[in-house]
Length: 508
Image: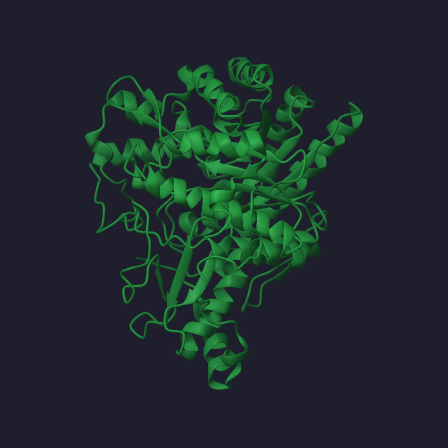
């Protein structure tokens, strides 16, 4: 269980709505787990649909001189491995069981840097036509004061992209996946660090310009920021990710929030400018961690009202800001214009995993409890992390995003933790969520164009360490990162090669 600090303003607004009876107009807890459909037979996807799998740099490649590497080194020095009762409850400032792994594993993560040819061959052999990766800022600009990227960093990504091209895999490239250079968090003259530095966008702009210079037109599909709300809450409010801060709420981190929006807008303009100059194409957006929030107690006014406010704040505030050009944080007085931001998304990226339950807590009035399963319903299916498996939530998120933004939708992460080689839980999860994506297109009118599994291989899952196994392909960390395909590889290959969900999965 985690706690999400939403702030006095959000709580007051929620309680006021509850007292006025307005919560009754708020969508309550849906009893569905799968979207009803009359369709039978194989569910065929549109021509040109992208079937992919994802990794990120720091989670799968060797450590770079980044803020996360600095955090991991400090964790090792101080032996901070406290784990909490379950995944998702790792104590702030700790990495779960990090000390049990060898220096090689801690340094090289999943060994992608030396196994990428094998991994990309496996993706192509599965019938996939896309792979999502990230370009690590700290690999290109490892030292402060650099005005040109490190040649060896550019050469590494050129090799990876060349391998993808040879395998006919479309690269989906993310620019910021939670990780920045270590030097970026050194204080400036006013003592500000990271995204709050006076020169933050100057440094970011240099990185983006270097990426565009070297990788346009080889890359067309760009994601500027991965899950900005996860980064904001985990790094600046809950304090579990670097920079490990504990601010009161999102409004107290509004300067970071605004800087991320400005960083996205700058990257959008840079990538399009360079693509236009080269008569190439750039498709640029962000991807948001959108969850299916629901009141734990459907009858409780506070649970329903707060769940609705959390849905707006977590799922939609950031994307709304890109649409309008103004940062408005739900139930706060934050309202800022971000120059050049409005309309800077060619698609909307969605990362979806689970349903999340919200319960008001009188002991922590500004921090409602956030639960990944309902303790009153132990029969709910869950994964290895204890997260509820709730396919219908993907349909609701996709159709709401389609209605709000009118943009193409890319599912850039969807997956589950199942360490078994005969991964029955993952196979059921995969089929059920692909079904929901098809229904979102054909029943919900959503323009969904990609489905990307998280993840291609087992990798480092941030503060939960190497415990959760989300890979289609298992990694044996203790034996030279040996790869073993899980049973779900065959199922995903059948889906990707036929561009359809087989008829045996058409009904839940």
